[in-house]
Each structure stands twice: as structure tokens, then as C-alpha cells.
Amino acid sequence: MTINEALSFTKILRARKAELVALRMQCSTKTSYFGEREKIEEPQYDVKKMDRKIIEMDNALFKIDSAIKQTNADTQLKIEINVDALLSPLE
Image (cartoon, one colour):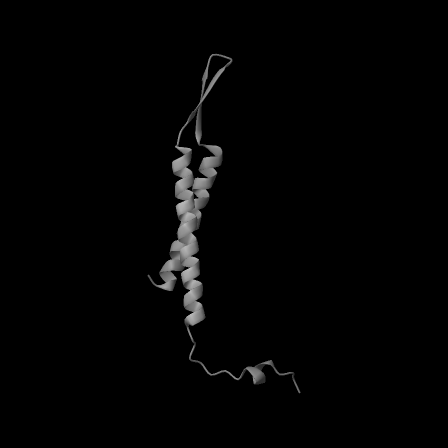
């Protein structure tokens, strides 16, 4: 996987994770009303499976982020820039 692919994938993965977290918080139960007083809430999704999927996404994001940072730490750029001249005060 290239760094560009990994960055694109993390963007998609973060969006999907946000959707799952919102789903877990808002729509994880199905509410049914019978009559005026009887309210039944049934789980629409298995909360444990949903949490497991969110944790897997967090772990994948962590691994990708760590790999990108390690690659950046190991990569040397072959450019010549005179830093002192660029950052020196104006005369």
C-alpha cells in the first residue's frame, strides 16, 4: 500500500467509523408502541459486534498512522536548500 493509498483509506475509514458510532448512539434500538402505554425497545444491532468493529477500525487507523510516521522518519529528502540564507534577517 502506498502512503497516498493509506491516507485515502484512513479518510474513508474515519468516515465509516463516525457513521457506526452515530448509529450505535442513535439507532441501535428499535422502538415499538403497542397501545398507549406499552413501549418495547429491541436491539436492532448486536452492540458487542458493533463495538468490536469500531475497535478494529481504531486499531487499523493506529497501524496505518504508525506506519506512515515510521516511513516519514526513515525517508530522507534529496533536495538542496540553504536554510540559513532563507531564514536570515533582511539586511
